[in-house]
Structures are given as C-alpha cells and as structure tokens.
Image 1 (cartoon, rainbow, N blue to C red):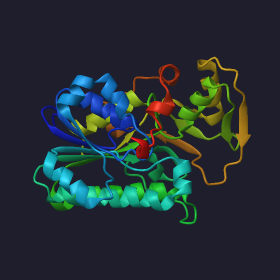
Image 2: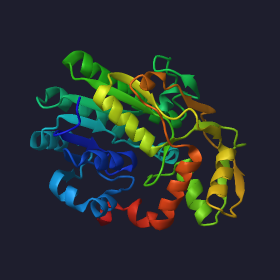
Image 3: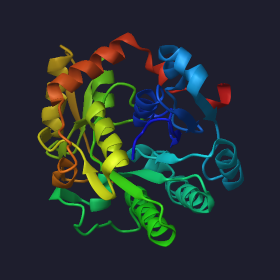
Length: 333
C-alpha cells in the first residue's frame, strides 16, 4: 500500500516514535494526530521544525482513546484511510504505579479504535505498535510464531505485556471478521532523540550529561538489543507498505548487558558519572534479542550501530531542553 496522498491517523503521534512517523509522512499526506499527551509531548518541537507542513497538512486531536465518543467523532471528521496505532501507556515505572490505567488505555482504547475502524468505510489498513514484552521473561531469537508467555497476575509488570498482547488479538480478529488488513510490529528496545519516559538509554544519557550516577538494577547482566529510532521507523513504514501479520522490529546485532551499556554511554558522553547498583523490586526480562528474519524478507536492514546512535542521541539532549520538550504538563498547556 502506497503511503502517498492518504488520510493517515497516528495515535500517539506526538510521542517518541509517533513524532518520527509524522515527520516522515506529512509532506505527502494529510495527518491527524490523536494524542492526550499523558506522558509528555514532542508536538511543540514538531511545529517548530516543520511549521509550514504542520499548518498545511496536520490536524491535532487532543483526546484520550478511551473516550469512544470523541474518538468516533474524529473518524467521522477526518475519515482516515491508514491508521498507525501507537497510543498507549508504557514504561516500567508507570506500569508498576498504575497498572489499571495501563490496562484501560492499552486494552479498552485499542478495542475502541478497532471497533470504530470496523464500522468505518474509509479505513484501508491498520498498523499496530506492539512490544517484545509479549514474549515474557526470556526473548532470545524468538520468531513471530513462538508462544507468548506472561508472568503471574500478582506482578503488575505483566499488566503491560498482557494488555498489548490482548490488543494484538483484537486487531487480528478485526482483520479476520471484517477484512481490514492489519500489520503488527513488536518493537524491541527502541531509543533515540525525543524519547519520552524513563527508558534506560534516556536515563543513562540524561544522568551522564548531568554528571549524576547511572543506576543499574540488580547485577547488570540483563541483555538487551537496542534499535535506533530511525531503523524502527523504517520497519514500521515497511510493514505499512508491504506487511501483513506480525513482525519483530529491532536490531539483533546491537545486544549487550545493562552494565556494558552504562559504560558505553559514559564513554560516548565523556562523562565522569559513576555507576551505582540498586535492587529491582519486580520481575525482569533477562534476555531480549529479536529474530527479524520475517521483516528482512520485506527488505529491512537495521543501519545504525549502537555507538553511532548514542552519539546522535546524546547530542540531541545536549542541545534541547527535556523539561520544555519532553515532559509537558498537559494541564498547563
């Protein structure tokens, strides 16, 4: 499916990955961002960087996708042909502190979007941004057909993974029952400029620039494969154009332990920050490295290595003020 001359709705479009999608698509399409900016926003940055295109081709609906009536009104007004669904609540700290909100937004919000899409006459395709968390505590080179595993319901960490997995079932059901093409991207540890929330690389770089200690949870032996946001963006665009079904999106070549990552960030930023260790009071994922063979068959190749990506990311944070760009209080806007 060509991504030109389309009405494209991007839920979560002022967020981290969503803002890159907006920039990539806005010159040749009409874009509608649906976002309540709950965890922060890059929208002011987008307006400043792309002012003419924003005025010409972009509309912003500041609503919560849990509000079905308001979401339905946006569909009626904008008539989206392609939907990138990135809105949701993530981040381990948020998940642990408010698991009910996580479930409500990720599950009910996604159901609302799917049901309205099924009734709409305009929607041609849905691209859903899921997560590698659906694979459970160990995700080493698992493919998209591997069984998904969740931890106990008594551990709030798994409320996020479960809500995202259930949303996958919703969108697969929409495709099966109503014939709307669906592509699902399971994202593996995406990082880069504009990241919102408390991701490891975001926290490490922010603290190293401020000469504060970098906190490692437990012994730091956890392994993650890190995917730069540009590569993630290319993966999402690829499954939007050519994909059908579920795809892992990540970079298996850039895997290392948490402690090795912290040391690399300190080296890249030329910081004198120390590393401190702290006990993690919840379960954790020990290994997370994607198998991307299925996405590779569509033409995907991750291009940005970790050191290069960290340099780009650190440079951005040094020249932009996170308090103004990334952590806007929606009640003060």
